[in-house]
Length: 438
Image (cartoon, rainbow, N blue to C red):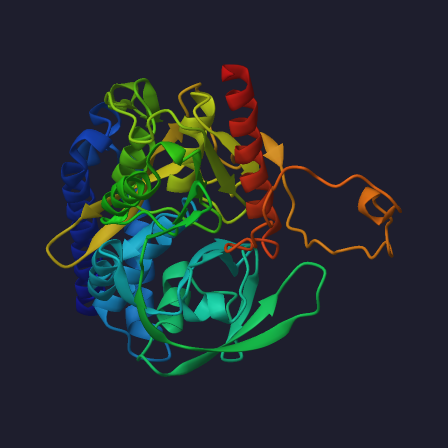
């Protein structure tokens, strides 16, 4: 005969199992189109599932009763859910009340923190991209940096959400990040947390070229892009010769904004397709008529910090031969995450599909390869000494036309080698086309 204590423990364990099972069914209902009904677990007819849930219940009870410190049921269950999701891939995870609220604020373009987009790699936090004009960018963090310690405490053993939570904090407080960077010794950097306001579009005219820097894809990106294009035409009119779209260190953002940004430069055709586990859930997004750039040449600059939504834009414009892609190979994040609210306070981020460029390429892990590879470099002027020219020869004929003095470049780009080469490329295209026309 079972003892009263053992009986109570068994009942509690099966109560936990029932609760988890109910949660599993509820999650299946929330997914709607993302779940494959034919593959939904039938709890009543699946003995193996019950055995696994019973095992979970045993572990839950043992931890709750015997762990060295008391831990609340809420913390244990939340950790179990997050462990299940984070084990799937680096981008899936559980969003508790605070994380869910922070995510909603971030997509609106303003949040608190350091200003970096991160992922996990081999147990460390990997910098995907620092965001322009944020504490992380000013501190010199670079794409590919591995964060090994936070305030001296190792990152190994933490989930991505836990590490991000530690990096966030009260505005004005500092945190020390231990950085491992290829080909350099490990070093520490202290960064002061700040209120991060993302200005997703920064634009200026460089001579007769419109330079547009896209730092992220949030709810304001397409509106800002359209405003910048209109302003360029209003100021330069027919003398405008082309556009440079700078997506370097852009970690991505909202899929719908990547689609509308791509559509800005396209007249027709597919922009991106997504394919989930169920073939019936595949989607295709197509461009609407109307190229805001009026067919002018476009050059897109990417690098290893260009990820996700940035790769969608670069891939679409490359496949349609609407832009020349220059720079370096992009990050290679070709998966789609869906935010699934579980109630009004919490949600989960789940990878539900892969996305493909119009030609059917998957970008996952491989990224976008530029049409012209341009490394990060620095130009140096070589002193060749005094060079004799025609004007130095005694009795040389004078020039009978007045060419005027050469004007100084008001938009010096010598410090940005990749941008300088992109400008040269656009000017070369314009020169060639103008000569063909004449």
